[in-house]
Length: 527
Image (cartoon, rainbow, N blue to C red; front, side, top):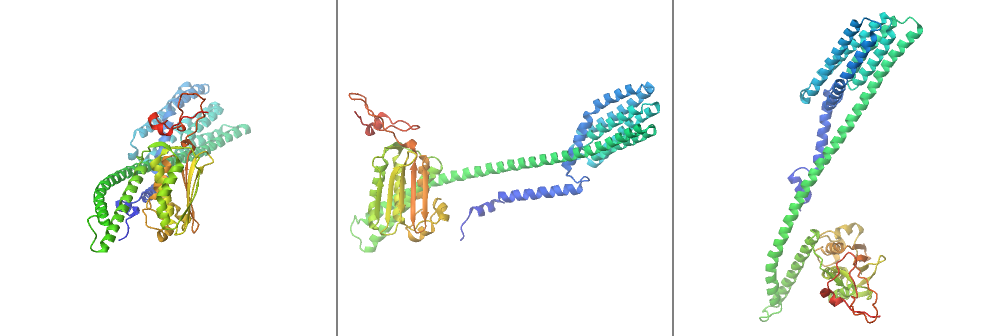
C-alpha cells in the first residue's frame, strides 16, 4: 500500500490553494473579456459606469458656476442688445443647465445594476447638444457689433463643456460641435483679415480642447484600471489571509490532536511497557530458575532490548513534541561543561570499547561554569556521542573538543570518522525521523530524532548548532553556547573581609541563584 501524503490528503479535502487562485484568475479574465465584447466602448461595464458617474458628478457640480457665468454674460451683452433679449437668452441657458444637472442627479440616484449605460450615454450627449445650442445663440451679438465678445464667450463655454464631459467622449464631441459651428458662423461678421485670423484661432482652440478632453479621458481610464488592479490585489490578499487563518486553525487543531495522542500514547504504552520490561528482565536473569531451553533466554533478552528501544523512542518523541510546542522548561543552574562531557564520555566508553573505537579528548578544564539546564546539556552531549559511536566503524576514532569561542562563549565539537552525509541530505537528517542514505546502509537502526532534539535544546539556550559532513570524511557537529550564559569570575576581596563571595555569578539577563541553591557553587576567596 502506498504512503498517504499531505498532497493526497489536501486533494481529498478539495482543490489546493494554488488551484483555487488559478481558477479565480481564469474566471476573472473570462468575465472581463465577456464584458469587453458586449461593451460599446471596449471597456468593462464597471469602467463604463464609473466614467458616466464621474461625468454626472462633474455636470451636477458645475450647474451653479455655469448659471452665474451665464448671468454675467447676459449682463455684459446688454451693451449690444436689448436687455430683454439678453435676459431671455440667459433664461434659456439656465434652463438647459438645470436640465442637465437634474439628469445627472437622476443618474447618480439610480441603482448601478439597473442602469442602461448606452441609453444614459445618449441622454447625456443629447443634453450637451441642447446646452451648447443655447450657448451658441450668442452669435446674435454679431449683428449688433459685439461679435468679439460672443467669440470669447463661445471659447470659454467650449473649454468648460469639453473639460466637464471629458469622461464621456460622445458627450464632449456633442458639446463642442455646435459651439465650433457658431464660432465658424462669426466669420460672416469678420470683415478684416485680423478678425478672420482671430476667429480661426478661436476655432483651433476649441479643437485643442477636444484633444485635451481625449487625453483626460485616457488618463481617467488608466487611473480606473490601476485602482481596479489594486482592489484585485487587496481582494487576493484578503483571501490569502483568510486561507492562512484557516490553515493556521487547522494546524492548531492538528497540533492539539497530536498533543492529545502523544499524551495518551505516553500513558497507554508506558503502562504495558513497564510490565514487559519487568517480566522480560526477570526471565532474562532467570530469577526463578534456569530455562529449559537456551533459546528462551535469547528471546527474553530480545524482548527486553526491544522494550527499551520502544521506551526510548517514546521519550524522544515526547521531548521533541514539548520542544516544538515551546513547553520544554529549562531548569537552569551553574554547570561545569567539561564535567558534563567527561561523564557522558565515560557512559559511552563501554559501547565504544566494544567496537574498538578510540576517543581523543581536547577539553579545557579551566572553563568557567555555564548558567544552563544540566539535564538538557547532558542529553545534548549523549546524543552527539551516541551518534558518533553508532556511525563510526569498528576501529575508528572520535574527537571531542570543548573550549572557548571567539565571542566569549563555549563550544562542544564531536567529530567521527564514519561514512559522512552527502550535502543534499543535510536537511533530511535534521528533520524529524530523517536519516541519511549512508547511515541507513552502514549504521545501526535509530529513530532519527537525536539531532532535531539536540538542535531544539540548543535553540532554547540561545546557542547555535552547526553540522559539517562530507561522504567518506566523517561528520562534525559543533554546539555553541552564547557568552551571555558564561558565568564571570568576581575579583578577590581584601584580607579580613567577613563577606562570602561566590566563585561565579550568573551572567546578565539570567536570574542570580539563591543563597541556598548557590551554597554548593560559592566559595570565599581572600587575597
